[in-house]
Amino acid sequence: MTSTIALPLLDAPCCVSSGDAAMAPAEAETLAKTLKALADPARLRIVSIIAAQDAGATCACDLQEPLGLSQPTVSHHTKVLVDAGILTREKRGTWAYFSLVPGALDSVAAAIAPRR
Image (tube, rainbow, N blue to C red; front, side, top):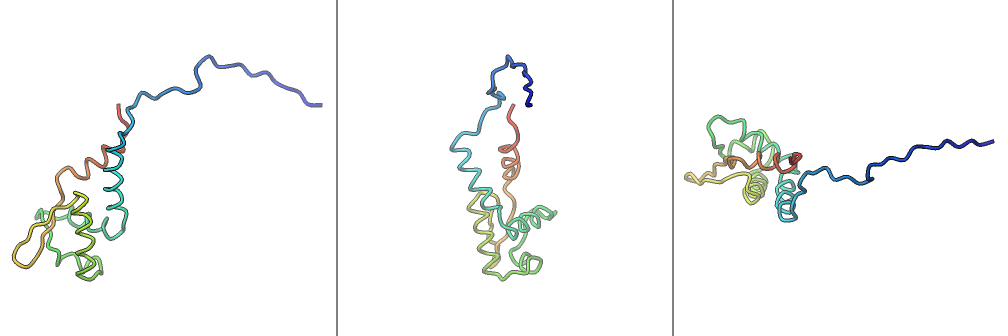
């Protein structure tokens, strides 16, 4: 024999908005491009290496050994990060020096944090 239990009905509506503003489509597109640029282990390491430097800028030649990558591969990854607006590139003689764009990573964190 099966017994049924009556459950009380809730008076609250079933779908309540959290009140947080959702991300705009253009903002989502921009953030997706930035996250795609960061979604590679070598690129994350490049950003980490550059962020850890006290000098403010890191020569491309100083990225090859710690990454274990060839110069053309490092060049490709840094180009992706520059195009995404995460790094800036400055030519000094025959070498390229890279720096983090101020606030570039802050904007990524802010974009995915809850909005109030």
